[in-house]
Image 1 (cartoon, rainbow, N blue to C red):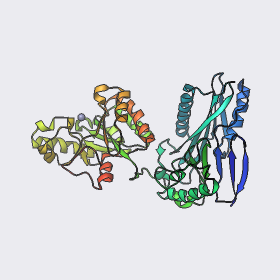
Image 2: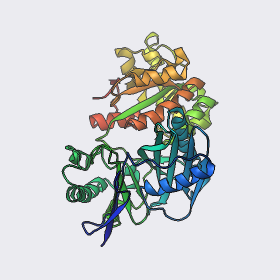
Image 3: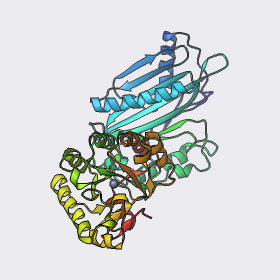
Image 4: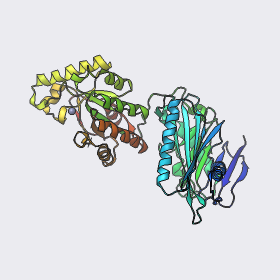
Length: 461
Ligand code: ZN
């Protein structure tokens, strides 16, 4: 098979070399590209953008593209996009594009070009690439290329985010590594590569996260200064269809937890809540995330819709007593009653039997543990959401907690400020590389066992 190979840098804007090594198409969009002539008006900007889109293209366009231009004297940007199926996916892309444009307007750049590619995988997921090229100004106000970034996503048609291992088999990184390592090795000189380039092409779970794929091929992207020296831009390696045949799952998985990656349990007490909890469930759904809700039995009849929905979305439902008493002030019999009545109600409404419980106020003693007869879940990170009632402060409490792997975060689903904080926390956790898991999953993956009755868990090793 013949593959072509393109390099663009300061001296050579485009040089194409036919390359027989491996079935790979390879593109580098180098930063520090020569400055273009200054654009003084909208027509000038459009001409500039058309040129630059071609120069910094990371993948070949598939089908029709539409371009929108936003011209301003200080700052202009253009968005080029492939046809997008469905409103939910379009809304997701529009939101990312708006965020990128907003971030860029707030920096001191002069222009921004956003390129969006949308493909469908063989098992029906949508693969999305959003790349941006940023331009500064030189002393004569000419736009100069200041670098390129790429982000990629996998989505369901309803707009829910998927993780790579929900779409691809666990062996996909090994397949990708086999081809990519040889390719980089044989294609670039030692001077072009970074001293540690091999670290970025191993089958390690940190690698091969950025890609665009369709039914017949996959392009992996490597950021500037990872495999090649800084200033050489994003590297794109196309693997064609050969390695993909065994790498793609026949069917997209609803969830996949990778035991080798960090995981965190987000928990919400005191519900089922009303609108605030519905908003939390919306956010969890949007990011394909799960949490654990510790419910008070007496609220389940009035908020049954949220409770049912939480269980349906794959969240765990835990016991948080019938009506929030201080367990240590009750008799053993009363504690047992609080637990069993709530468990029955949860089973009736949600169709699941709780495996975990959280004592109100985190209050327990030996007698309570015995009487309750369930695993008692405390927490590692107390967001104090009930006290501050401030979304930024709640988010800050999570960010300030350091390494969250194996930790349990405490919030309450009955406050609208907590729902707002959840909108910051869930995507941030994802961005930091954490998988959200339920409390039972966290215990199972970290200890190898199911939650043990009579045991208190605060964090997992
Ligand atoms: Zn509580």
